[in-house]
Amino acid sequence: MTNFPRKRVVITGLGAITPIGNTLSDYWDGLMSGRNGIGEITHFDPSNHACRIAGEVKGFDPHQYLERKEAKRMDRFAQFGVCASKQALADAGLVIDDLNADQVGVLIGTGIGGLKVMEEQQEIYLNKGPSRCSPFMIPMMIANMAAGLTAIQTGAKGPNSCVVTACAAGSHAVGDALRIIQGGYAKAMICGGTEAAITPLSFAGFASAKALSTRNDDPQGACRPFDQNRDGFVMGEGAGILILEELEHAQARGAKIYAEIVGYGMTCDAYHITSPVPDGQGATRAMELAIQDGGLTPDQVDYINAHGTSTPANDVTETRAIKKALGQRAAEIVVSSTKSMTGHLLGGSGGIEAVATVMAIAHDRVPPTINLATPDPECDLDYVPGASRAHTVNVALSNSFGFGGHNVTLAFRKFQ
Image 1 (cartoon, one colour):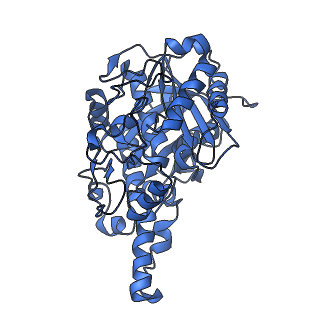
Image 2 (cartoon, one colour; image 1 turned 135 degrees about the vertical axis):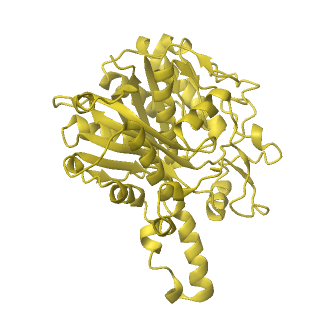
Image 3 (cartoon, one colour; image 1 turned 30 degrees about the horizontal axis):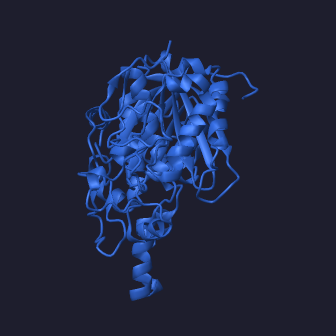
């Protein structure tokens, strides 16, 4: 809970580059229609890998938003972050100029950063020697560059930072941006998460950790959160960006308002480097803190966008946590995992899932959990299987949990 006078913060712009659509409208249409963005990997030859499937972004053209020279000097994760940020600013109708630049900040999280360029430059180093490595290698590789380049591209001179908390990074970034505005340190924040880690080394590492699905013969059915036959997560890539604004600032310029962000809970399991604590205590506390921070009660929560990774451990643990945090209300709340369609964007997941949650509030319709054919007996909530559903959503939570035991819950409500 904050102990300073709290400013109300609203969402006025959204941007999304995802495996099921490269604009907000395409992404939302994809969610509503249950579009599946998972297929065989094309970014590299995966033939000798245990996992050969992923949720790749398709048809992405950075030159719609960036000059060719600028795009060439960015890793793919940074391209996603910058381009989704430009989408979100345009959606918000927020023009950054000399009068407001100091009051607009950027906070974009990522789990891994520029892994692709690091792998490529390592090959150059080994085959051609150190003198042939690119002078742009370091600024292309470091994780803060999505935030830094977004500021350079947009002129935002306010608070600027990067969160690197694995799969919780995007949600941490949104929550931290909320705190910055609530504290009066900025009037608006460009925030969210981005990731582009579909690379040979990444897949080798995650597969060695037994984290990835190996349902290579059925890519469309591989990501199946809460299903008894799930066997691991499917990696995705992309970015989700939100424009958060102090309410008075948004109203003064006549901005449209999608929803209000009211709560932020973050905890740590302090248990294991990759596995969640089995009783879900850390996730439970994150949800409880977000509800408390938002001045809400469990009875007000209508929808939860679950972390829902399609791993044996996460889905059962998250279900337990939801039951503990929401009590009797848990049985009445609709829950869904949009990862069933996009795959798991790691540090970018909290960004696109916050976008989905806000859109669910704005449209009173919730995305489905696809591929949920045989429910796990231990996962017995209403996961909206198969098809999207009309549902009044006044209050919604978005969960993100990451390696290292990081837990984040964001609380949103319909603006009144």
